[in-house]
Length: 434
Picture 1 (tube, rainbow, N blue to C red):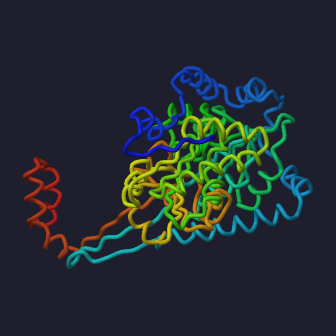
Picture 2: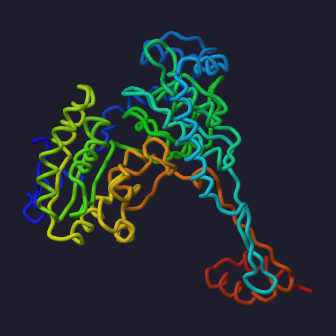
Picture 3: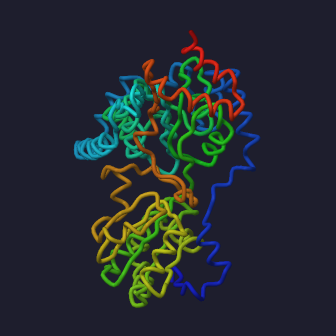
């Protein structure tokens, strides 16, 4: 069997903790190496980027080739079939509409008391860098999920860094997605060197205000080291998928879905939680047929991930299953129950939720609308996924008339004196000194 069934109340503590904690991306051993890369790029700019492209990517480029030309983007359309281009356009449209719906009013104000008006104004960030990973594959969907929310928020300059293929080229699908989504500039850079370039700026790559996007352990290490020098988005680790199911669930669907996140890498997860014994053991039997359909590359990821961080958890009730789901706080949660909308309201901790029997979490990966950059490693306890609000600032304002300040003068001066700030109190009193 590719996946183990555990009765929750009889589950050994070691197995319970392993499943609940799952894998975390290890970066401590490479921090010193990544810091040297960051320091070199900060000091030497494009020259260092050219050298690291040779060292890490095994490609030879000039400083002029760091940035992707418009001609390369135009040529990409000739290398991808029209059906794929249309798919990118359709799904990008969904993502754009969803994130537009997240936008608040650009400004609002309210009278808090006579003569006092306060409110908020929305100001987009100026420059955002989006890291689009490569390595195990090429991801136009990752372009949509980072570039589009920034553009919808009104960010005037959105840049993309993405690693090249062994021939030095950027996959055409990625370039097409950058063009469709409105990326302003695209750079042929991957790994920690890309993050360092966007954080500090070089002769070619502009310094940005914020960097978003998932990546390798070297990208995560760069994020950690540069935290505080540039704003960093969600630190995403290995992919996670958990399914909440009752007797209404189709075991074939559940068996297929348990493999979705597990095919991302060796440390990803696939978990099913149910109070229905027949479903638990039926899914366990059927997982193998879905694994056997995969190519050897992805099959290896699924087999190893399910062995280390996969499980079918058998509980005594739906309520107990929901409790476990909230403890797990997974990146992706499928709710395959008879009443998914009702059960959703009992979920406190999840990165994204996929409701019903016809919403496999893979729908969210490619452009159903909501963002697929979601919190991992139980960060869903305190955080949600990437959103439009991550790309703007909400600045508050207030206006007092003379009468308005007079109305609150006594209370404000009293509190200023209590807290020991005489200059604060004096500034208010001065306005009423004859």
